[in-house]
Image 1 (tube, rainbow, N blue to C red):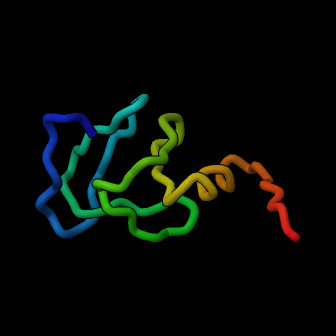
Image 2: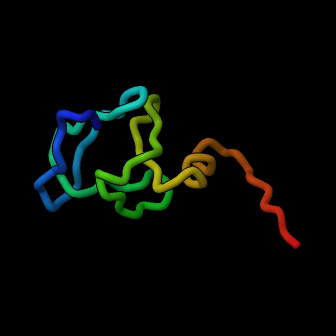
Length: 76
């Protein structure tokens, strides 16, 4: 999203074109769905996406999962 775009006024799912470092809203809406978890992500909170796959992720863990990266969690 760039500084000229405002918060979407629609209540449904938005359609977004993901670019390098920003995205363009092509259909206004309140959220997009995470490609991994399916959970809704408010448009103003979209921080992780793939330009190549044109999909959003709920967080860094979801993106790593989509990329097939196994993350070793440190435990006690």
